[in-house]
Length: 134
Length: 113
Image (cartoon, rainbow over the protein chains, first blue to last red):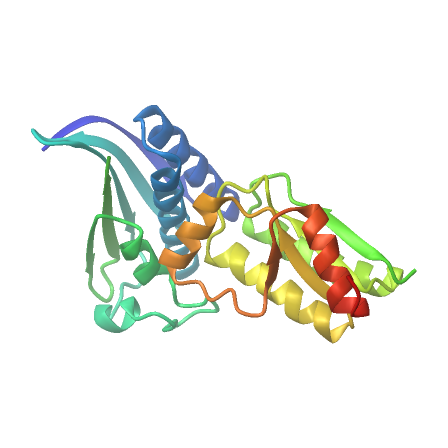
């Protein structure tokens, strides 16, 4: 797996969620993703950026253009130093939320991506990585 | 009085702005005694769970204030993504464009078409 290029975005306020959406859209367009795929990855990024802000007080997005021998993709890695997630299976369940949201963020982001990984421990923050292949 | 309010969302809204729209709109429904609200989202390239929930809330609140809401102009890519996201847009009436939306409002409000 090769990282062609990457950029880092800070998520500290609700305006930053918009900035994340716009940066992901711009990157997806430049990489030649079709409109539906652009919309899916942008929507996933919006859900995950909001999660980082709402549950961890903010975080960082690493936006990467990746490729291997077979294909090229857009990888989003969200990292925060928040309280972490005690029960990941439960957090992934649609409709479950410890906040005020609809509880669709994690499950929805997973469905909108081709690959989804989550690492989290209470007290150690959360790292979520999603890939959409072109 | 007793007319329709037309709201066109033209920018990528951050969350607080979306909540402000929700508050403003409910106030306007009362002050104009509106019977219908038409929300044009054709400029929106994305609807995530937050914006989807705001649209559903506006529809519920309007109903309590005796007004019907129709969301018009959703892009096909947005519709596809919403279904995969798993967003239950229940209780939200939609129409393809403003003209069809007004038709839907007439039917819902006056029972005529």
